[in-house]
Image 1 (tube, rainbow, N blue to C red):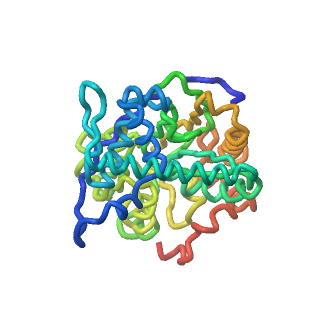
Image 2 (cartoon, rainbow, N blue to C red):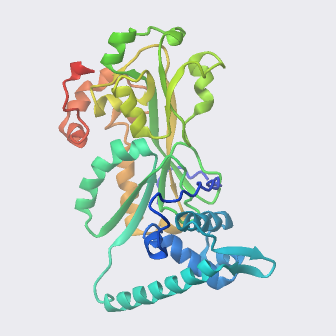
Image 3 (cartoon, rainbow, N blue to C red):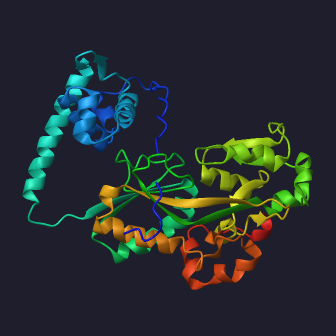
Length: 362
């Protein structure tokens, strides 16, 4: 069991991305198919055979919104429409019929392979969705060790700022900074993410060290715009609703955001554990501290899975505030956990991120 209070999420449908034509000319269908995820293709197959999106939702137990979004994802990658909705159900386009035949053949080949491999046990796949920063800088270094202790598990770590559709089957576990709207999901609070302003030594030498948020007009601000980033707090952070004049660089990527700050682009809001990742960013004490709760979302039907239980226990340990001060409910200043950063059980996790350049180079 989850072992803590169960709380109870709808997911915004993704907007279709514009289709770009290749400068080298249109690719063949076989080339385009290499971009299509098999799970999306398999879902299209089941929905097409069911005859309608609604019937497909009943068969696959995916929400109608999830089905439409994932079929749209195939269409975006192929650059062609697969079906049109009519009163009697889905009417496949010529491309849709070709894709249906291909998907059926792939299913037949897969079933043959599975029949041949029935004698050998298969590894259980566990899909963990997590925000990009926590996934890249915190979980992935620890995940390597976890998987080596459980070689029977096939772990998929999905790092994305967009919230995962756990109810729709996109992931088995989701680590996010907001509670789901779907009350059927099981929710466990894992800890807290504390954030504060950071800047590089290079930037501070050029622009000076701010002593309070009142000095924002004298500085450049780097901002991350993405799902689960509390952008509504920006006027509070800056002390004004006129925020556009302060932001000089925006990105939707946590890693790009981190890199921009470390490279001297300006002041940005980072988790306090950023100091453990790199000494090229320095926390700024300007009286601004933010706190976000970290939640783990699990589909009730996946809770009984041994692999999901192992992953859940590992996630609890990974966000244990008693071991890792930056996830404690109470704010702990980065200066106070310098010794913890140097501990063998922590510093080894960041060997892939520690700067090779001289810290004084900013």
